[in-house]
Image 1: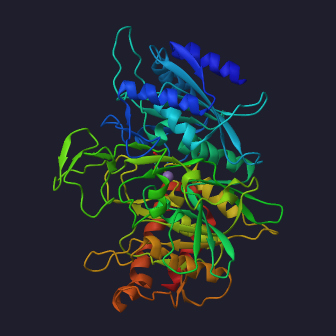
Image 2: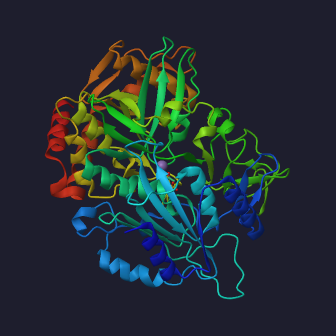
Image 3: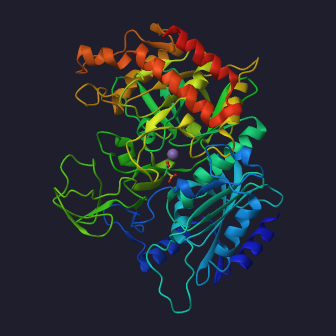
Amino acid sequence: MSAKDFITGIKELCAPDSVHICDGSEGEFQALAKLLEEKGTWQPLKKRPGSFYARSDPSDVARVEASTYICSAKESDAGPTNNWKDPIEMIAVLEPLFRNCMKGRTMYVIPYAMGPKDSPYTKFGIEITDSAYVVCSMKIMARIVKIEEGKDFVCGIHSVGMPLEKGQEDVPWPCNKVKYIVHFPESREIWSYGSGYGGNALLGKKCFALRIGSKIAKDEGWLAEHMLILGLTSPEGEKKYIAAAFPSSCGKTNLAMLQPSLKGWKVECVGDDIAWMHFGKDGRLYAVNPENGFFGVAPGTSMDSNPNAMKSIEKNTIFTNVALTQDGDVWWEGMTKVPPEELTDWKGKSWKRGSAEKAAHPNSRFTVSKKQCPIYDPAGEKPEGVPIDAILFGGRRASLTPLVLESFNWSEGVLLGASISSEITAASEGAQGALRHDPFAMLPFCGYNMGDYFQHWLDLEQPGRSMPKIFAVNWFRKNSQGKYIWPGYGENTRVLKWIFNRLENREDGSKTPIGIVPKNLDVTELNISKEDMDSLFVIDSTKYNQECLELKSYFSETFGERFPKKFVQILLNWQSHF
Ligand code: SAT
Ligand code: MN
């Protein structure tokens, strides 16, 4: 389908009052910013030039996994971890919702690219939306481009689902109780209805770069992953790249922009959320960040935890659902040790220090161009990407998994990725704190059968390829008093240093049945008791035996036949050592 036919078809279906083809210019952004200010969606922030403060509807604050669908032709291709509906039945649901849904509104057409300029790995999309807030956010998160005639693109249709009758007044954050985030992996289409927030509405991100992206990657033999990408330079000036997968809201942005606590080490940021990775002619794995910006979790971000993020958001940033100070700046839990005495909270109500309620929503976010990050790595613009030497898998687990563990080989490392479990965070709706399996941190983002996804990862190991080493990390281990043992943030450099040296065969480790843990982690000047330190690396045989059993039943109950036999062998082998 041509872009023109696509636009005409959606215009006919959605019946907007007018159509605006976006050019991504500064003038366009400013005009839309003004419009959003007039509508009361956001307000400019006096203290931060070019920045805006938006409050969403209190019912529209996170990804809606229960309403997210992968509508492949066959149910088995969506797999057990995705909601599925027959594509024809789904269209019958969507058609009436989208019919005339843009009445009284402008339909914006956003042509965009995911990936660096002139990269063979870059892919294109067109998002049609009736939200000016989405247009402004997409200008930051993707590259707005002109799509050449004949180029393939992923079609995305987004509506807030609130048509306006003649004379009906708009609300600051239009949305609908009914929400659908629907992917058609075979026709590479995305239909999103009812939400204006984050990954539900900025279709280049989770919908395209991960769900549709992972399906394209499977078909074409590459990887679309929920991973940050960072460059790590040693005091000797050697540089290596690391990709790391963590579930949403587990500190990916903090790690991606880490300010090293150890002298002489340097971290540079290529991406904080998504990596597209391909094998190059030399047999190494190369990664590009398809995104242009960060959609980062605000709470917990501070000059202590992530100074580079704090510096990135001094200007030209959209803040959504954080709190507002009396003098017109933003604030969120964790930004300062002592909260301001008085704030306006994310719902617009007055808030006093000591209040039981949070002033900022736990999933409140900043949206900012990656170019504003003081440690943005210019190599992030390389068309061929950056070579990945190590892949990290992490979760948020109070017990069991050690601070860091190096896998013996590729297949066992892939199983470590498949075994990620994490305590649920606020990035999606649902019970927070409960432990859930989140293989590869891709559970909500894999656009096809996850059993096939595991096999795809295993099949990547081929003669002539040099596979990155795989590590599991866990910053969130607690001691018997329920306190986090590891200080995390900048101190994670110590773990990165160990990993770096392992890649160079310069560091010893201790063998455990499932991999190698540090013998001598550099903990100089850290105040951790010997008991706590030991417990960071302890592999408890009884608990691991239980974990292996639990994993076996989770995997076989969930994935049945599609669960790779190789994983069963490895699990049995691990168990025989415990
Ligand atoms: O999906 S979002 O981009 O809104 C947030 C996340 O889950 O990382
Ligand atoms: Mn994410």
